[in-house]
Amino acid sequence: MYRKTVEELQKDQREKLVIDIRSEQDYIKETYPGAKHIFWEEFMEHIGEIPKELPVYLFCYTGQRSDEIAEDLSEQGYEIYSIEGGYRSYPVSYTHLTLPTI
Image (tube, rainbow, N blue to C red; front, side, top):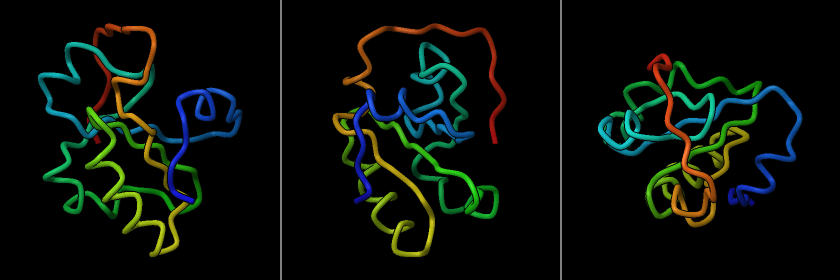
């Protein structure tokens, strides 16, 4: 299954990659702690940067776009998950200073 909840993400103690696929403006405003940014329309252009050896969690605003990407990439052998409900399901607003873009 390629969907997980925010709670499942937070309980996953393994090294992992969290990617926010919302707009850069939304990402700069607030994101999940430690999340990288790749805008959903540009995601496939960065596929070579997505590790197959790590679990990957995707956030979009509602979960729809991350569902589509996660479904496609899970069929290609990635351990990739869409966060159910998207960023709206993340209960605490987190504003950050700067995080690198992949």
